[in-house]
Image (cartoon, rainbow, N blue to C red):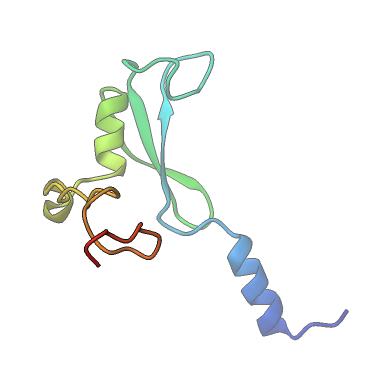
Length: 100
């Protein structure tokens, strides 16, 4: 049962919350679910490895989501449409054509 200290520390580090993790908390009494009070102001908190520290306050749920998940320029571009699964081609399970 005697593990070397470095293996124990590695296992412990996997369990710990990562430093810099952020979350939004509603500033109204009662239920704390994000969907319960979408227009209520939010407090943005950040984990510093020891405690949650106040980072900012925002007006509502939409502003909190924008703050927590900022959209980069690469994310703004739409992805091209995927090829239709029924597109013409000679796929592995396609029925052979009569002219072949």
